[in-house]
Structure formats: structure tokens, C-alpha cells
Image 1 (tube, rainbow, N blue to C red):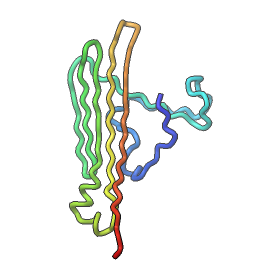
Image 2 (cartoon, rainbow, N blue to C red; image 1 turned 90 degrees about the horizontal axis):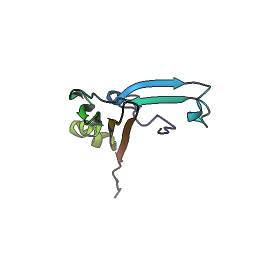
Image 3 (cartoon, one colour; image 1 turned 90 degrees about the vertical axis):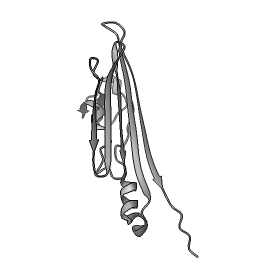
Amino acid sequence: MVRCYTILRIFSVFFSTFNPDAIKDVELIKGGFPAEYGGRLSAVLNVTDIDGDRNVTKGKVSLGIISSRATIETPIGTGALVLSGRRTYLDVVLKVTGLQDKLGLPAYYFYDLNAKLTQILRQTIKFHSADTQVRIILILRRQCCE
């Protein structure tokens, strides 16, 4: 379980906090939490990653004006591997259009990577290891006055 205390960030209006290609299910628990979520006061958002396809390799690519994402699922051993990532390129768009220098905006972009390995050890035992890495990069330029 990963604790995510706030799901808001810069430009959260345009970009989801969670990569939709890596999500299998979302459950909002507003009250009466199970013991596994002990200590929560208001609500729990339980987000479940996809397990991947254990039979065939498949992928998905989505290109947009200011962001792109890609996902690949492939069978490995008795389970599957899922790799998913996305990146915004608002910094590139602003630089190419000249708006970054004109408006004095910082070079902002973010990317995140999701990886999950699922293995069926026995019919009753399922092992999975998942890692989510999120990077938000904000480059501020120093402006000096002479």
C-alpha cells in the first residue's frame, strides 16, 4: 500500500494523478474502513494496478498535444510483466512557440513510470511486485538585473 496524502499538483487540471493505462480498479471508501486502512480520518482511495496479460504480448501508445503515454504487457514465466510510462512535453511546446522566454515561465514537465511483475507460484499463491516512480521536474532560470 502506498500512502498518497494529496493527489493535487501543478497542472492537475490537465493531467491525472494516476496513469490510467496502469490502473485496473479504483474504489473509494468514504467511511467504515477495513482494519488494513487503520488510522485514516476522512476517506480511502484504493487504486489497484493491472496484472498484465499472461497469454499474449500487447501494447498501447497514446500521443497527445502536451503529453504521451505507452504501456506494454508481456507474459513472463507463470505470470506477466507490465511496463507503463508517460511524459508531458509542455516544456518543449513552450520553448518552440517562444512563450517560455516571452512570459518568463519555468521549464515544467513530469514523467512517471509504473512496473509490475506478477508470478503465480502455485495455484493458491500469487506473488507480485510493483514500483511506481514519479518525477516532477521544475527548472527555474535565474534572471539577473544589471
